[in-house]
Figure (cartoon, rainbow, N blue to C red):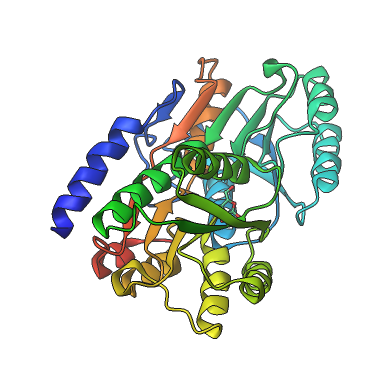
Length: 346
Ligand code: AHR
């Protein structure tokens, strides 16, 4: 029965997978779950490639894995000089870092933007300096698409749609689909692509199911303490909650702590609150194995080798895809195994 559900959901989800952007396939030398694959022929290059990388911060295990992946791929031994900047969750620090990279005459800028808006002027400055900009992880919303050269990251809307389709199937299986379903949404950093896409998918799901009610919606900023605080505050007002849709693993950990402290059980298997999460870090998957997280949708942080391949192709004068999405999957409490968790590198 469990297997049947997994197969049906996989079929449904594959059916809903959309988007016309290119789906990034792993660079040839890059195993899907490993970061920092060496460039096979850096010695053939005439010169070291100088790259400035502006990262949002270090808010989650996912983010740390993302930073490591880019640093490993753009390493000295692969023929790069990397200038790394941690913006500590402040877009103004990212703008300052980009200006600094321009002054240092880098060959490429890699930007993992905190939020989608506010980049037009500084990207125009990079364009005037003729420095190609590669956007990673989250997207930018700019007036002119030519302000960046390429994007590689996750299809956050599709991730959210995966979660909504899964929830629909599970509520039906457990015959909870006709009753009122009270949903709490702990959002990510407001204005980030990860938040915009995942929230939009949930809101669309709520609009199309008259019995799904949005009980509360607040940002947990992708961090555990904030999500704990938000969930605890919501629980003071109501404990009539069926689903908590957290927008990353760190938030799910904080929400679970608050739910348990309030005496609520977590997990669809024991008739408790259905906690949905994103990222699928090894800790998040362990929570899935324990049943406390019911669904964990993967968000792949191992983007370094793809960024390296983009830069290498551009340096060799090859044309590159403008927008590429990484392949991602999902895991639930019915199908997760210890073996899957042991293979996880983040
Ligand atoms: O942009 C990706 C999101 O940012 C991940 O889901 C989250 O964990 C990270 O902080």
